[in-house]
Image 1: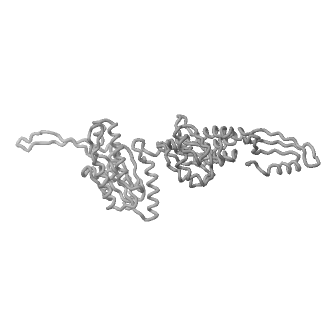
Image 2 (image 1 turned 180 degrees about the vertical axis):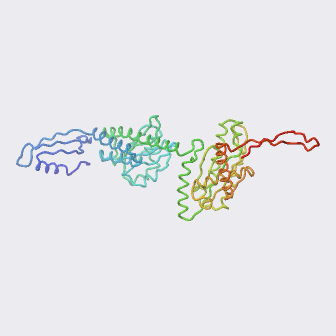
Length: 448
């Protein structure tokens, strides 16, 4: 029923015009088995009722699968085609080779939940209905195949108990049977499923088995490539220890947020956070305890902010928050909540710690028009808070920047003075004020 009904007429017309033709088409054997064939037709004679010809049919089913399907998918990987587009390509090519099939591909995450990747011939509501559904021993064909780690064949969706929870969702599609196979990575872990749906109550034939064999390998390659890319992105843009965005990722996200706020005339606050006396934890209990404390601090910071705010770990024990749509008063209140949240005791290796921090606050746009300026001013305010009294907060002001610039200028001039030999050593005698005015010491002075 999936053969091209116009093929015989097209062959006759070509023979009448050229005397020969070559076509590729889907045909079926007497047992109903589908075959892709290349047909070479040569006219031998004209007869009363039409044309006499010789046709040579060459089975190209395997060629169709390997050279066409595999070639297209691998080219898509080389060209960095997005995963969903690549998986849709697989499904469309499979359905072109085997038109009686409706193909779908699901991903299975680390928590054992499914996420639709491709189902070009399925209604969109199907994917929405099964998004995030956990795999299990009776989770339809795909969820069960992922749970068992082996193929699951259901020849009658209407009666099979595996489909009890999903039968009503799929009923409008008219699909009667489903054959799902798990996609496994090179470590043998299930990372997805590849399924064939049929409009009839039937079992897969030899062509379907060969198609699945090829596609499972291609899908595994594609999913592993995506996992590797995600891992590389994680290492490049997120802190390995705490999972927070690193400096690079925070800057990029903050730049986008500030650009949007600037266009809307909005405000923001940057909180520069540094833990007080963190070095003592590393020195007294070791770096493992210090790492545990940093992870706990990161978790507490994330619980202290809103979903639209940003958090990051800059380096060591330095963290940063960007509060969107936030004025000075609200920033101070949030900073106070953060200080309180961080000060709650935490147990690490049997010892109780009470973390404390100093926070510097820089406001956008008054204290800086961009991320780098806000980070610099927030850092200056944080050091002022640490100098005044630890476990406190400080708003940035212009005087801090002037003091910092003056100190930087002094340091630069002093380096030049050393190079130019402008420093000289002098001794100031220290004399007692008694009658003898005896010498009791000398003050050494370096004069510029």
